[in-house]
Length: 139
Image 1 (cartoon, helix red, strand yellow):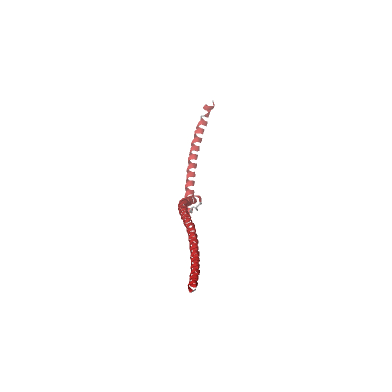
Image 2 (image 1 turned 90 degrees about the vertical axis):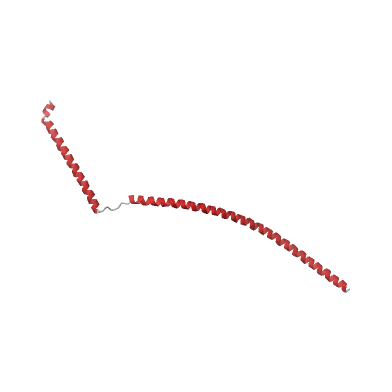
């Protein structure tokens, strides 16, 4: 009888242990499958992120190059603007320069007047000579 009780206890414990082992095996397989799915998803995500990072690095390099080109162009435009601005903005002329320019202009005008007066006087003299001889011309 004791053997039967011991056998029943062993059978009961064996069934309990086998059930626990079976449950543990099922849980292990479930967790293993979940881990495989998670690992595959993470691997795809890493691949995607790597491609995205590579693409972003390429975009950053292109944008840097574009920015450098634009900065070079901007520098050239600003330099040109400074040159143009110097020409376009009226700078006050010094009094001495204005005075010298006016005197040179006045001297030039006086010289031109003198030349014109000499030509006019010479022309007038020739007309008077022709007028004096004009009788011959009129006849």
